[in-house]
Length: 309
Image (cartoon, rainbow, N blue to C red; front, side, top):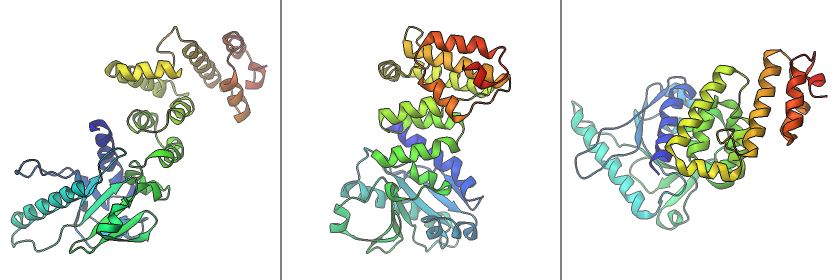
């Protein structure tokens, strides 16, 4: 789960300043010397007024200068024992802040738990109260304790750091929504780390992890080669699913993908725009000979329609 958690933390670190327009920033806290009492991170509130206009849960941080955040990705434990550990880490951070300030800090450190869904046991042990889609106040509690159920959150740009914790069908929906909004490198990282369905991963890799810009395409190919070199099991899975994108020359799907990409590059460099219908025609073609013929025609054609005739 290390890479999965790391991707979530990286998204928080990179997106928080952008989606809040500098109103909040993500920090990795130092380790408190007990055994290992270290939270995932905390949000330092820099401009409360900038958070007030954003979708929940952001406005809930306006009355605080810091919020401790625990991220529970798909497959992580969210039982009562793990939540008790989260409150212990919150308390450790609170104690650390008390003695780091002069005069002594007398506040209460808020705790936000981000997870795919709200566990049913929480209704038995506590009294969660929904105040916005996907956002719950957990009580009774002497400090602000929020549970952010990522599967229930609306799909909004400022909520992407929370939305990466989705699971199941909700994660597939998020992946389809966010892919066209992000650069190729981020989409490829999302496809590697987040546990979406194999079909969604395959479709997204084919439709969005592709660019007609030669520089972006070259970076994409480099990233794919590096990922496959570091993860033989991923390479085996990609070969099995038929989406190796030409990295395994012997695979028919790889040859088709290469041929489609070459055709698109030639058309793009000649300034021949593809309509949605022509894009679908290229994707639907499974005959290497036809793709090769279209590629030859694209060299001299005066329109994309003529090239694909």
